[in-house]
Image (cartoon, rainbow over all chains, first blue to last red; front, side):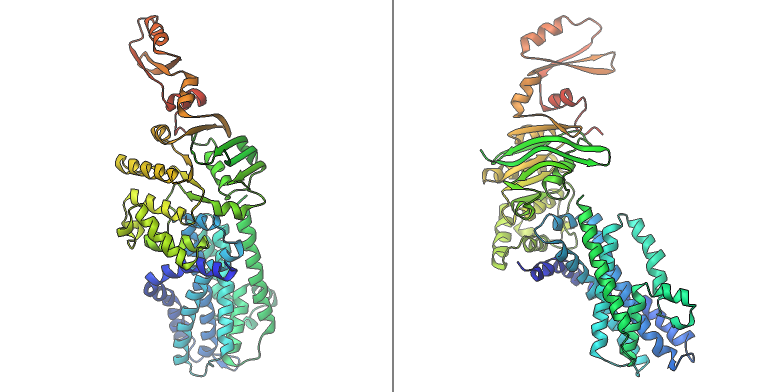
Length: 248
Length: 287
């Protein structure tokens, strides 16, 4: 069996699961971003400009980014957490001949699927509200990359956090602030240099930069592209270490 | 006879706690081996090591003839594991769970279909194949767990407390299944808190205490070693005392010499529970 075959086998069970609940899964992941879109983009932001851009055009890629972030993270993390602590089925994978790297990638793919569907749905709504946004293949590639990196982050956290309470705390203390602060709702140029430097150490900042640039036709932010790749590699290595430690 | 499990001076430490302390164990091909011990004795850690979930601190372990450190992939291919808790995806059907297990065991598409059909028939779950796991009874869930572990035809099956929470009828049906599996060539490593289960099913029994194997033999020999007849006496309606004797005659003579204040006396054949208490000083399932 190839690595790809193993990855698909791990992904297959999550996909099967999602097929049974797909309507509720997608609907619930859209509520918050749609509220953000209406409240910040269409409500508070109307008539506001960010540089040369109207606020709605500025904020839509940010909301697409935060949707990709939160849905991918939660999609991968919550399923793995349930498998580990409620269904106890994750041990079955560990006792099987499937290698660690296939388990990690396979477990992250459900986050990629969920994150991509939700983010594209928000993007389509955004296209109606702000027709100036571009439809570019590179945008979809960056969206997929973002979803994959955030899903790996979710897998990592589900592997290292061992309680339901801990997962909740992490979401409230880390994930929620990130969704607001990483250049999603406001330009980081407005912040002091120190705060800006700190926020560049968070993956969503780079994802928001990439999505905004590709959807608004701005110059491609190579630094953010490399930054996001580095986060992806770091999360993957973290997952490998966490899996190895789990058998100590 | 080949040893399907062999450990030599196996140790597993968690900080200063020795969960397994120089364990020397062998399980022979074709037998049903019962693994008993009070809670905290090291049974679960031993199973985790033998099933590749936990790495040993030191010592040698081979499972199915393969070194657990150097040939872990081969070990994974020859073992099947049924965990104590239900470890199936409850959002899926029995068939979908089996399909998943067959996929991660690298069975080809045609082999998957064939094995799933065969095994569903083997455990009489065919008509429940497309039911969600949560719609099954406790006994059926356990059977579904067992068939998921058998898809790749393991030589060695680990059953961790397989009948916990089952009613008497379901338990006996599961015993029949375990016997049938063993008769069909699967070596069984079974942990249980039910002494009757170990007595009825197991060819040999090992008793673990404080991370060490303190007794191992077939149930009849173990009973003989502590004494095949036991006298239970209740003193002051408080504590029950157990005295073991080689035969009923010696036991009867002992009873005749008991002081008159001993009111309750029972003479009976010893069982594995007596062996267990005698060897460990604890009852099965004691914390």
